[in-house]
Image (cartoon, rainbow, N blue to C red; front, side):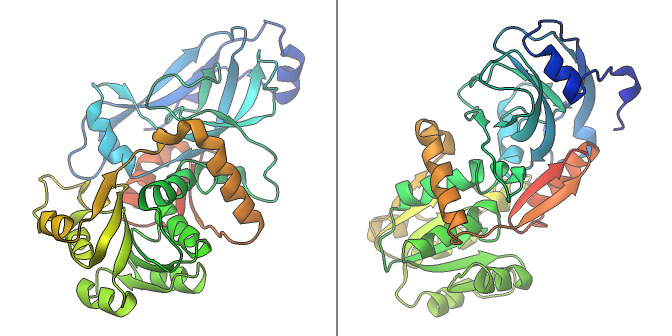
Length: 361
């Protein structure tokens, strides 16, 4: 799993890249990337991947060369890879710095965020390449905030929370929202938006420390450790008027229980099912159809790329709330490109509070 940098000619210093801007004399660069060679069985393992070296071609007109600074690890990665034919490049978002450019709109030194996968260097024309990719965004000056926020609160997780809650759940002031996976990148954001919108917010997370963070730092009305509490009793305690909106990040029996405790005409946004991603067989849980029918619930799954046409709207609103002090964030930072798999396993085990990212160097 170690890299052989000695065979890669890293020719781009910032000054050299600036001199070569639009000159057409850029030389090749060697990139390292993760290639998935085995489908996951249980938790992801280092042996499921190979790290390969790839010589990148000379830039063409309109293209940029980027060097990764932060890579994202997200629960969806565990679920999505089964859809790809092996061997395949590992998917994922990253924040990268432009180190060479033949695109007049994106100069050297610019930071961009894109779905480049688990790789150190990327050549792109700054266009979305397929329906699974999210928009490539050129980052504004985020000072005093770190550029890694483009992978979290000001990126895909932030927009997942923003559009998933507002468009699917459509909460009204005074209603009660319940969130599972509430201390993660998406769940912690959903709860804060819920408070901004004037709702009562209840969260379920996996440790007492996370629950304390949700209540004391993020303003959740109540937070419960799902590993130690009785879920139904916690709902009666935290949501005395029952539940109007449920933002589901985990699936499993806890979701069936929450849906049975919802008010009539409640809305359920299904964002993920992390509780079963590593399971070798589908879990057996209480059926949800009786609650859906008798309470006339609306339950809808979603992918955030539904709103690619409104992508900047979500980023702008989240940045506005952040600057106004209405949103807080926390990051779990792993270090080193060779620790990508460990970071992915870590978030699937619930190691992170807030967004998890990997700092490449």
